[in-house]
Image (tube, rainbow, N blue to C red; front, side, top):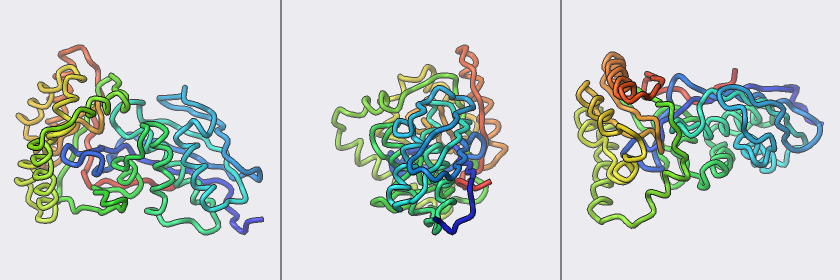
Length: 310
């Protein structure tokens, strides 16, 4: 019998921007606004049972092994050889296939809530491998660009499996516009299978190196010069109606850079301050609206917090 008297815990995990244009599959940052919430109830019977799924996406699998939150929880409980099991209640606040890190948020919220019930909870960064099992189920590959910032907050670079928190120049804000469309991550990744020209790889590496240098120097002008995607964006742009027009609208309204958030369809832009971000968001949403596409806009500090117990 465990000495831990806590019988339930609730964690709220934020949406996130994956790739951040320049860091395909290895960089992301948290986003204030939409979030997923998971409550874990401790039970004597081993395993994971999903009791309820509510919110903007309630038609998800109820079998734990087929659900991101359930799969991540199973992985954590198995790793610590837990003598107890959990029942999960999942509240989805992030739309499916939105490019906002919804599967990562469910996975992270689940492991954070379950971790709080352990006799000896693990450090936050130690939860990454378990949350990745939920992401693997959703996307087919355990890429951590949404998982790490969702868990730890801020702008995170994954370096050979280890999270490195990058400094963010003071005042930088992100605006994310989510059009009411879906692009499945698996489908978007299919676009990336043909081989790349060496020049594209060199350009992406150069941009990434310059971007990281700019973060450490606090050089916003250099960020504007390097916040570009030479790998995924050129092959995915045609998946989203009006992509180039939306990007142009953002840049004309002061954005430092603009691209897909994750695999889309959401688009993000980095801006010098909250005022610029609000103006960019209005311009981006207007382009979608002109095509008859409804959208939501989120404005957030780039250096936003990660998952929290509530």
